[in-house]
Image (tube, rainbow, N blue to C red; front, side, top):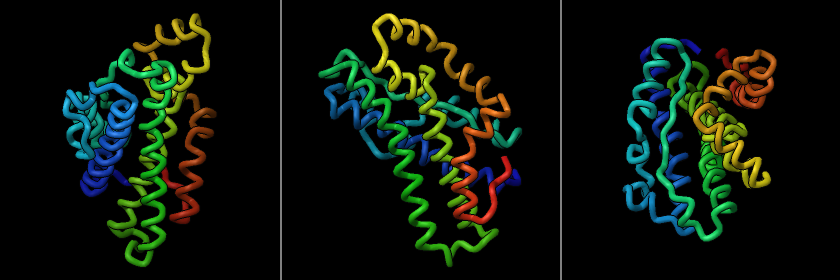
Length: 212
């Protein structure tokens, strides 16, 4: 995909929607499971801008990377207090899974909208570019966040199934988890497998796999 001002602008809009609602999923799930921390921090809202914190890693860094390298990578965080959950171990899994679940729902929603509006989104149009970007982005966010490395959501899902000792070891990886995930995805064979569902969906909808 060519990196130009139009692509950057559309990607920025898709990123705000996708990562903002991802974090909203965490916030609403935590509140429903007994933790008022997201509400105390003003996060119990569908306004995506309220969730783009810290601003540097949630907005500035992804846009700089997009403009300079074509890669979009960043992170926002939702404050939670697992000790407030009614069943901390189980509820931590549910809150972690809520964010990727939102991305799955968004990807499905925009696939449905694209199929309904395909005549208004011809190849090469701004509309097609928006659908292509936001569908790909939500699928990538879903898959990346479900990698089993803390602090990614997949790490909190995995820890539910571990023994207390293994949970301690996993929790000790939190400060290195993102780096480990990036290193793993830098392995060509792993990247091919990781991006296959995204590229295959792109092929089915738009006729050709998108170049990364």
